[in-house]
Length: 141
Image (cartoon, rainbow, N blue to C red):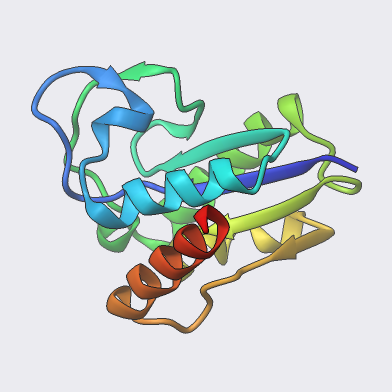
């Protein structure tokens, strides 16, 4: 069983093409990415509303697309593309997924994952930032 972390994209981005791990410029994304690395997973992927499933080192251009503005049909199509790509890299029945993603991004994927956890489920953005900061601090001490 491999450990795979999925992090959702964020609105705040750099203005130029960059590696996905660097493109997303919000404190929440940066803390999620640091936390994901701290978990020592076998893989980390970013859930992009525009590009689907993205590897952190993959170069992508900035965009202004979010699942929040998509219709239910468009979200299902997005999820289908993401699941198809996930299957290329992961075993959806055997691998364990850690979802660091908002409800809109994780809800259409969860039915396809046999083993998963959502460590910050139900937390506001402020509480997520606190949780991530605390986790990173405690591991550093």
